[in-house]
Length: 262
Image (cartoon, rainbow, N blue to C red; front, side, top):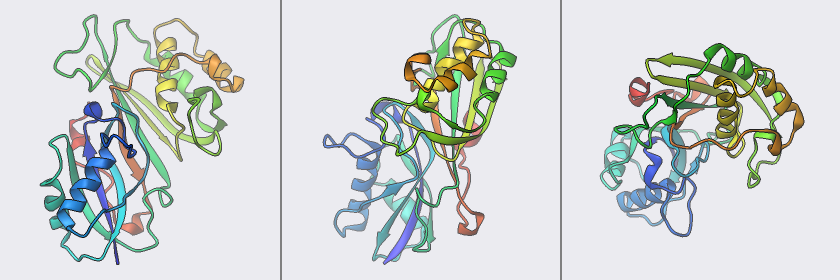
């Protein structure tokens, strides 16, 4: 058996998230069906680096699977893509050792949230960006975000349906930049809870719009209660940038879509 890792990009608007469901309308379902059709060896089971919600996009989801087939790396990419819908595409394939595990080998995970600040709702990029119509204060949002850095109990930002064993995570980086009318929020942590980033975004925008002071974020964190935080923000502008692995595995850390994202 050979272990293969794939980097997968997808637009999540049409799907019910990543993880396979009985209805079959998930990114994982589409990928596994394409692999089954390409390999013609029966069902193929994949394991991913991190699950995403309905409507969330992925620039570089990483999966692995085991197969008895030997194929060139470019053949895995082109062959699988020939059976995938247009809004899902394998970006790269690598042969990896049996010790590699897409989820367990990840040292960190990265997300970006792209937000449009405009008095008018998005049109061309509808479903691909979040939207606010009030002006935002960058310094206030960054000050609030800094309170989340380090290892904390993130219960206040955890969905009630979250299945993680522990709410304690290590937030390594939050960066907020503006490019014209678009804001980009980048997050890196060892792992994330269900809805964690979307709940943090709701709080950051409450601070950025002046409804809450920057110090309020630390109070929300300390409360360890979902009731203390803002409502969950839209999934539209959320992108899974992919996991971070030991360089020894030789896996890419970005795809061409990284150059497109604002």
